[in-house]
Length: 96
Length: 227
Image (cartoon, chains in turn red, green):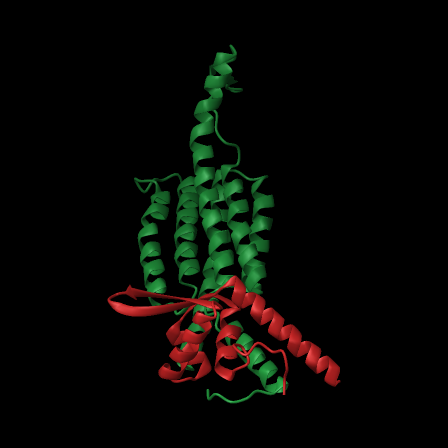
């Protein structure tokens, strides 16, 4: 198992969400759900954890009278993701 | 997606999978390209026809470009409502087209203002431009105009088309832009009627055809449920 890996990112769903958000400017909650195949409840919990860690921002707004949740990665989230990927690369490198 | 402890391979697999999912998400339906390709082609061909066959339709056909802003705004609003994600690539392309619109407005101002400003500046310096009819010998005040004005538009049309084509790696747009650059060079040696014809052909090659191809691709993806 890993050591020194960011526990916030070292989770299947949170890592998937951050991997999606790092590649886009912003994404709706429904987009994240669609791409991760997660349940709304589970995704909501993981998004909240990422938000609490300040890795993402979550904006709630209305469009055509429907509530919309927009997620964006923060500079802190980008740095955390880059560090996580680097740690993974180091680990894989050491293993090989 | 369930929660469980990850191995390094699983972590890398998740990252790769998500990156690919975003990469495959770009779905341009070609609506803007079809709209502007049709409008500019119509304006160009009608202008060329009027000039070739010496007739008038009674109004300036290029007014269509202002009218086309209405469906354009409607398309933007509709797309914004449907869109669930905005990629960095889409943002970059949007910026290119916004800069293009600013450029077109700038060119229009240039074409409609400089020919009035220049005689005034010359007059302030005690200079008046005159033209002499080589047949009759009649001398009249020379009315200034922006030389080969359509060439500047052709150059402007090619720029966002090529930039978008290169960013999206969409060959029909790149080809369309290259053809438009070729038309620009040709237009330097041709008169108004042919320039208008080249403008119409440029709109067909760089926007209408790639737009229709994108539309076809988009509808096929829609049918497969990939959008």
